[in-house]
Length: 297
Length: 86
Image 1 (cartoon, each protein chain N blue to C red):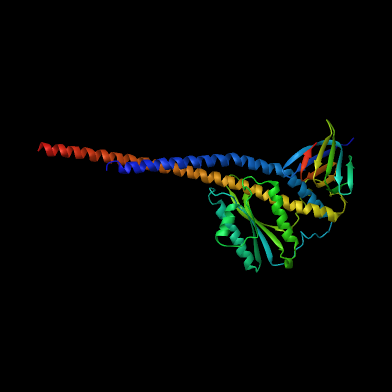
Image 2 (spheres, each protein chain N blue to C red):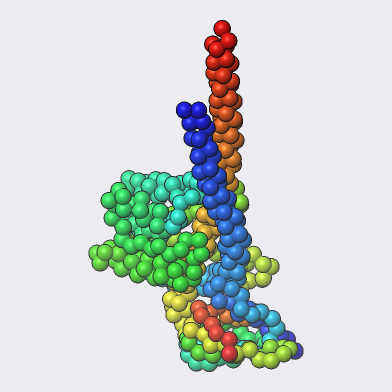
């Protein structure tokens, strides 16, 4: 019987050690990918800047109403939930879903019907498990979003938005995603993407005098028609990139904590194993001594 | 002579930026050439070829699938969907 509990502790130490290795590896992978994700965000910035400037230039020079900027005032709303494909990222997937649920409830309280568009396997499985209807889902490799994915998502949503409500369209689009503040803080947040509110005065930030009068080719309407969908697409791409960086930061942090916890566990089990060994030895000695005493007397 | 400062960006990166003497791009109404002090312009691009005569070095030529161009104060911004340099 001696050594029984020692064996149990040894086995636990071994399994915790192999878990620790896994956590450590995940942490390092996340740490190396986060740099890439942020570089991608930086690389996409010139495009974002160029397109925002152009949109605000058109907006300040024309009074054209575009279907994408019109308030329809209907009662059907699309919600795009951007989550991750994998867990192992602490509270990241859960907090996104919580934020989405909060928004859904709020919209429903306003008497709106909510249509769910879900990106990322974790959120998809959350809603599937609860038997909720999703209009469309994307599992797109949430750590490394591509412009193509953004295009696909944007097109599906724009199509839906441009339909009238009688034709099964929607009149607003909200996006629930995570904002990358810094390596320790990532905040779930909600933006209403459509109808667009064009941010005016973005291009005036530089000390350009009054913006010049533009020539439009072929026509202001056509320029707006081609600009605005691109603008939406770019915004969605930016959201995906931000979410990717947040996911990786959350994962790095969660895996770091997990590694620390595994170390603590190993330490505790080692102590217990040592104690068990001492107890076994003490018991053996006292058995021998008492045996010898019995023979001597 | 005044020069144009050109930014050529695609969705995921900055492709090229620098000084140029002339830019030619496929706008919706046909190929347009931009020289210095061009009037401000916002144009939709259709698939075609962009040519940038750089101020120094060889001309830059690229196939694009669409996008738009803005010209303002000798600052030319070409925003393209997909691009392949020739």
